[in-house]
Structures are given as structure tokens and as C-alpha cells.
Length: 360
Image (cartoon, rainbow, N blue to C red; front, side, top):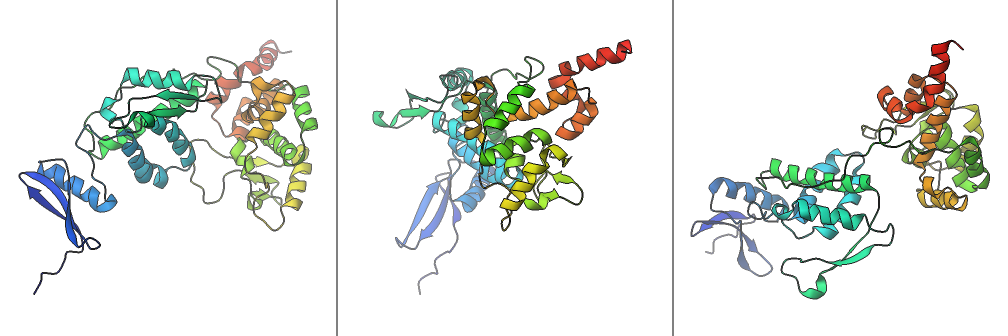
């Protein structure tokens, strides 16, 4: 009587090397895949990983950047990060450049080359040739989407280091790569936060149409971040309390706090229009992303140097401090710490401070 076939993979040893083995019902034969180690402890760890993912983790030091990013995404980012899209977006560029390279091969010169490529002309991209392992010449052309913002490049390389740290924590690598990253430039420390004058803000409101107009109006008066306004839902608007709860019910909180803000008379008209138009659905806006339309409006009005919606948040804080509003009140409205408001916008409060010191 034939022996019954095993339904789950099993661990076997051949000439001292560990293998994962399983029965392939389709081919009607037993398959083997090396675990790349002769150490019993490492073999059990890699076999456990194989049972979960059906992938074999390479020998220590040969884990590729692509594999590390994949494991980091599935095991940490998706289960734990509220704003996981930022992490995943950063990984696209890392994958394009580092891809099949082993983490152990990532070093300072290689990270500096990545930085140089990402600093090239914004929005145009650049096709480069990279020596990808075991690939024919025609597959080595890689298009890198480029940017001039060092903060973005730094965030991407920080994600790479986070993935490497996760790999070491899971005992997939022994040593971390050594990277070079752009300096951590901070607004308020190295440069003034960009904002619009009262006249420029009015021009943005006058020249905008449809939902973009209401977005600008609400983003300014609430001082909220772009996503908080774009994703605003009807349950978050508490008419009876005259409040907007920027934190979505059930959404995991992050370091970027989303406070409760008052419904001011200045924003009430826009809010009522959106409320009436959104009857029958949850979201107030039908547009999910105002970045491009806002940028084009700014460029048309000669404000291309301040064409990011986040400048509306800077503008609200700057205007309030210029009017002498308490720095504590501004911090509470924006959901930031007093220290952050003082660092980023404190120079706008100098006039008020001089009045209080002189008693005039």
C-alpha cells in the first residue's frame, strides 16, 4: 500500500545543507529548495519563513533591497502605519534604483549616487544604466523619477534604513548598511516658512472655481493639512457643537495630530455649500486630490515658488501671529506643539512681543 503524501512542507538535510521539501501534486513529485545554511538554528528560522511566504530568505548578507522592502511592508508598514502610502510611495524610487542589490552592497558612494540622480531636474526623470546582477544589457535601463527636494530624498533613504533595521530585527541580516543622507533641513531654522499675503490669498480665492475654491477656503480657516480637508466626511462636521473633528473616527492616530477646530463664520458659507452638495454620500468633496489643480492656479498667478497647498497652513499661522494672537492658541488650532510654532513662525510674533515689552 503506497505511503500517503505529505500535505505540508518538511525540513530535510542533504550533505549537511538544509532544504525545504514539499510534494507537488501537479507534477506528482517531491520538490526541494535550499535554505542556504548548514546551521540548525538558522535552518529552522528560514524554514518557518518559507512556511509563511513560500520564499527562501537568502544567506545572511545576500538579502536584496527589494526583498527587505517587501518584508518591511507586509510585516510592519501595513499592520502598524496609519499613513502607509507615504512609505510605499518612497519605496517605488528605492526599488527602481537599488532593486536586486544585496543590502550588504549598499554603501555611502551608492547612496550618494542615488541622491545625485534624485536631485536632477524636477518632473522630467532620467534614464540611467545600472549594473544589475545577472541581467542582460537591454534590461539595465532604469528610469529614475527625479526631484530637487532633499527632504523627500532623505525620507526615502530613511525608509530604506527602516527596512534594513526590520531585517536585522528578524535575523535576516547581521549588519546594517551605512548610508549618506541629505541634511535634515528644518523650516524656521534654516529658512522662513512660505506663506501668502492677505492680497495673494484673496487672489487665490477669487481665481479658483468649484470645489477648489471651497478647499482653499476651508484649508486656510482651519489651518489643517491638505489630506485632512480632502478626506473630510459629513460625520466629522458637528453643526450642533460648531466644530469640525479633523481626526477621522477609527483612524489610527499619528504624530501629525488632527485636532478639533471651530466652525468660524468666515468658513461657514463654503461648508454649507459642500454639505448640501454631498447629501447621500459620506465625503464632502468629490475630488480626492487638489495638489495639481492648486499648483496650476499658483503658477497662473505668479506664485510658482509657493505652489503647495501646505502653504495655506503656513499662511493661517503667520497671519494669526502677525495679528497678535497667542502662540498657544495657534498651536492648539494647528495641532502642533508650542515649540514647533515658535521655531517655524516665531518671527511673526516679534512685533507683538515688542509691544508687550515696551507697554505700547
